[in-house]
Image (cartoon, rainbow, N blue to C red):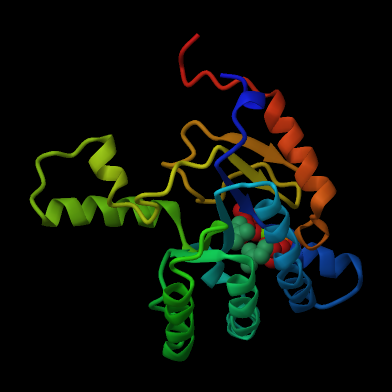
Length: 230
Ligand code: IPE
Ligand code: IPE
Ligand code: MG
């Protein structure tokens, strides 16, 4: 199957490079996270305009808790700040919000804010925005296995197992983009990426804009997806 015939339904992005963006400017790392957050609306708007049905953004991994406490607290504080501003943007732009990962480790006021944003936006139709927060693919796979084992399920197969993942009901990503130059998945959508096309760019997340999205989508269009067939 040639990708030029089928535009991606689901694009997932590993938003990396905030820290280096700040360091290159002689700024403290938190400034990079602020610049990264300020890039969200621009990128989401481009994907809406391109007609992409699902956009997943990897915002914070289960391993990111191991960063120095001030950085972690800064990121959580930033998320609390931007959620208010984003709710208005999501309503105006027709964005349905979903969360992949845990909310249990953040302050309950923030959990409440996020849950009410999910509820408020649930009927929006322009795009489904999945935010991978406190997300780790291995933890997700273990949780799915535990859940099926606890239910005593005998019908474990690829389909039923997928329905126990955080992405139940969401198509697998056709294209995974990683900004910031590293060429790895860092525990992101390991099950779901079985046949995803991968695209790596050295552009740091705060600088990632429409021209880079066009380059990624152009590159995707050249790919031949065979899914193991000939
Ligand atoms: C991505 O940017 C944001 C998070 C992982 C929270 P980084 O903070 O990893 O930036 P670099 O990789 O250090 O440049
Ligand atoms: C991956 O970036 C996680 C997110 C972008 C949220 P990291 O910066 O945490 O990944 P590593 O440590 O370079 O693999
Ligand atoms: Mg990084």
